[in-house]
Image 1 (cartoon, rainbow, N blue to C red):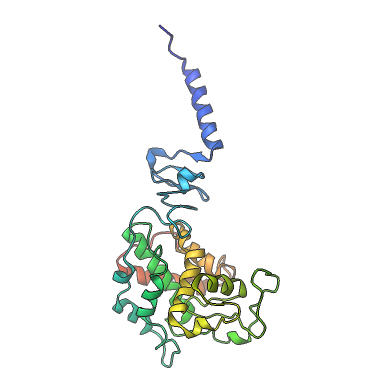
Image 2 (cartoon, helix red, strand yellow):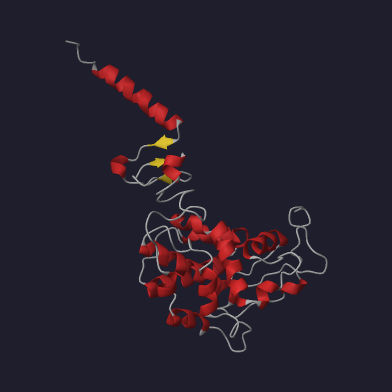
Length: 282
């Protein structure tokens, strides 16, 4: 009969095993309960790591790559957008705008729902509560950017130079202005170009389409959201502020603007019956 290994030998084997796991990008989490460090994915089984086994299918949080749309908050069906964004919820946002808004007749719930149908991963991929939080976050930014769906075009935007001539992939067209338009005030040639390509219009030659067609307008906002913000929802609302306007508002640069976004988010989470979560500021 072979003798049992000594305690020292067992510890040595365990140490080698842990080292191999770390080298493979695998960080065990106690009791299969994720509380991963920044940059790590929480797998569907509750462990932290960086490989496809953790960031792929079923990834619950972190820089997930599975589930489409740049990853998602976690496994699950999410929320029914049409059921959550009711006529009362949508009109409740618009009703807070001042009189004479250019968006009064432009922004409609029907246009939003039509646009959302082209982005099926919006508010999906996590639990129903995750989906409601994402909807609350989206409309919090929309309310802030447009004055409660009042502005279609950026106030004073036509006088601003939003052309980055260094971006050879999306060259500015002569005579066109890439100032803020739509629910998230899409700006810059490097956003209009790929947004138009995704949606189906020439964003460089005709950026004004975002301010003429309400469905295209909402699609431009949802395109930006799914490409830059959706995957950050597990990190908290603060991460979405950083993705949208972090260089201007985060790290104490403009606390008043940042806090207004947070206030809207809290308000909409309350209306939709979900906890806003943590990490709300940036």
